[in-house]
Image (cartoon, rainbow, N blue to C red):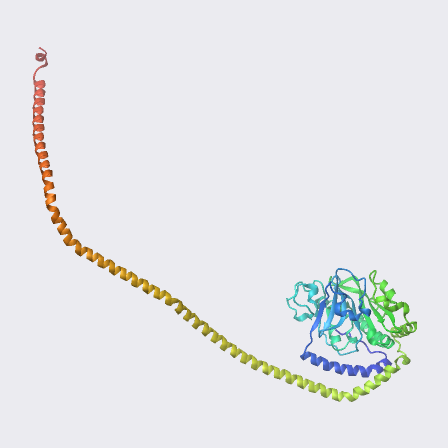
Length: 498
């Protein structure tokens, strides 16, 4: 995203050139290091049972976040990097844009390396991913990805850029890397994005920082007011951008700025209370309005004068920047002197990093080969042991079975032998015994048979006489019948009647 600031006015640019050159060089070294040893990005969704923004409450004066943002689709995110809180964001899952990001000024940095992150738990509260992840690496691990937040694909071909509410140019190192999350981005035209970052950078560096006695007590809120216009029917385009600043220090002050979307050159200043009226009803941005009733009017007037000069494109007065200018020349000279050493350091770091990567690569190949060989040997040994134990177990299990089977077969064979001996003995003994029995029974059967024979003889004789008698009677009856038939045939009936 080409959203870097345009050059500042000549005098201010000269005052800060040395600082920017030094910062750019150190940022290059830092980014080179984190490319090899990356940090851990976290942007956890704050739970409802936690107070405010949890560990990110440090980005609010008195550690009290703004009040009045109570819609159910408002999600609190504690943006972290390398296990440290970097800024806080209130995100609207309805509009798919942040409503505000709270941060502190660290140091300006021009070296930018975009690596966009998304928050998995906004779309999938049950996700095991409890921290921000690179959008390109998220794959299909998150259910309903993009249902409650904007994605890079929502901006592609839309004519809008991913404009950062918390500008990366106001942060350095880990703070800068943490800003590249889609939960910190709103749809802005390229010209408006450039204008927003340019104006906010100038206001913070030239107006706010020089007039706050303690830089770490300068609290910044950058926000957006959603409109009804949506990108691809999903992501709301802001109708205006705003910045609220609170210098929570002795002789403190607060200030509000508003930039309209339809006028990229607009930058209206107003009080925090006036800014709150343009937001949701009941909104209070700073605890106790950042002491607005007890503010030093002179400090606020001085801040507004610088803001007015920035808005009109004038150079910031030398009296307000003399100390910064002198410091800038010292840093420029220091930067010129240190440049060869920085280049040498960059070269040495690059060589060291490449050597470390090469050594790690060689060690990885060696370890991989050794471990692979060991694992293959262990696997083969394990398979051999398993096969051996399996065979031994089968043999040991079969021994009792075979012994039992042999014993049973022996017993059955013994019973068969006993049976055969008894059968043979019975047959041998049955021959003489049968002969003796039959011989002994012969007289008895012979005597008993006499009466039966005599009876049969008497029966036969009686039957013979009976048969003769029956035959004689039958023959006589036949002769009688024949004689009677002849007489009837040949003797006349008349003589018979006479």
